[in-house]
Length: 366
Image 1 (spheres, rainbow, N blue to C red):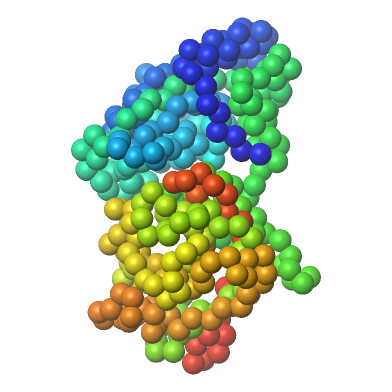
Image 2: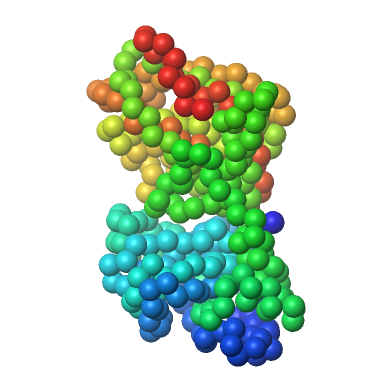
């Protein structure tokens, strides 16, 4: 179970130092602590140089707070890394993360929100001045192993734990949560442990979703002409909504949805709202998404929660009504979206039988 530990910088450092000092010296090459302000634009240079293939575990505490609001984001979502000035960016899914260095080079970290990536090398799509809107700090522990990291973590856990960090990372490594086959997470939001495959009615391809103070945007490529009458069909069972308030404001923008991306960069996402009226449409309240994403309420309220529901939407008509302008030529991807970052509650649902209905027949997605 993923945890988001709340611990002071002093306690974080002192307790980890006590544990690390008890580990046989042959297990660890070295360890270092780094303090990174949440309002520092990417990238933060640790001064450490990793060798290609070197095995590393990081643990982080702290948060980014959006000034003037109650919104905050923990290290599992915020802390990204890069090796070298032009290395590819990546992050873990929890407050601990174990990896092997993809190449030799200096180790950099970054705090993500309120930024957004424009390239896989960590260039920003947002102005650096956006970081003036946040405050907070992070403490990051970097452990460089001489032994297999899972073996080393288990040896470390034999001496104790620090607010669940170590056993949480052991669990992540020993019981990995992988995305459903042929689906992947949107690269510039990063990976998650939100979605898993399961069988429904004896058939593979169904997907279950559980979100809790995280976000996951799962994508699958599709390729079909976008023509009048194009419809999206799916079944879903929503057990728990992650928001109890209307999702059309930033501070309450936690939701579960299925979406379609078009070749013009626009997308329509169909959500089950807690209270917004069915057929209401609105642009995404996240500033960096407002220009490309439109939400349409497909269902609302608690009636029907916990039951399988079959849906079918005329996407061409919805595009004309909610977005307008010239219609795109093609559909390029299907998305599943789960967000629970803003209020920190849980959301649970399942999807199956996703397909497009066109004039030429049915195009299955799952």
